[in-house]
Amino acid sequence: MSKELNKKEEETNKQDDHSQTDKQETPPEEAKDQDKVDNEQEDPSPPSPEELKELRNKAAKAEEFYERLLRQVAETDNLRKRLAKEKQDAIRYANESLIEQLLPTMDSFDMAISAVKKNNENTIESLKTGVEMVHGQLKRTLEDAGLKEISATGQIFDPTLHEAISRKETNESADGTVIEQIRMGYQLNDRLVRPASVIVATPPISESETKENKEE
Image (cartoon, rainbow, N blue to C red; front, side):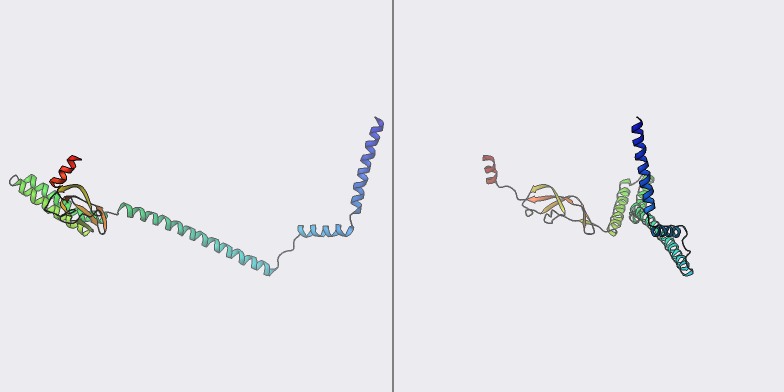
């Protein structure tokens, strides 16, 4: 055991000797340079008056740009909110003008109903006259808004404007002619709102064709 302890002590002494030798081998000039760098880092020289003035100018410009950026961000946000509100209002009140034009028609309806209730004589005639007046007024209002009726009777069937709900055999009209309009069609300016529901003429089947169909 004593021999092993002696060997460990000798190894420890050798390591200490090496570390001391390494410290002694450091050149004195390099040590001075390192001390100089450390001193410069710890005690930096103050900026010159020109450098201080330039730093102050840069700081003032940076603050000015920052304030300008904040104003632009605020203006952009306000513009976005205003446009969003205007869009909502435009959607909500898109039909305001049309409704204002329809209000007189509603007034005419109210007057017609009131007249029918008060007048017991000639009630049917009064009601008929009132309904015709209201219908004419409503039609004019819609026409002013750009609504056009599609007049199909007597016209050649047009699938872009007409909707054929049935066909009728007849010799009085050419094949493919609209002989009756069941429901009125409408266009808003040049856009189709609703096609006209029509009955289209078709030539009658002859007796020979009828017999051939039965035989088949």
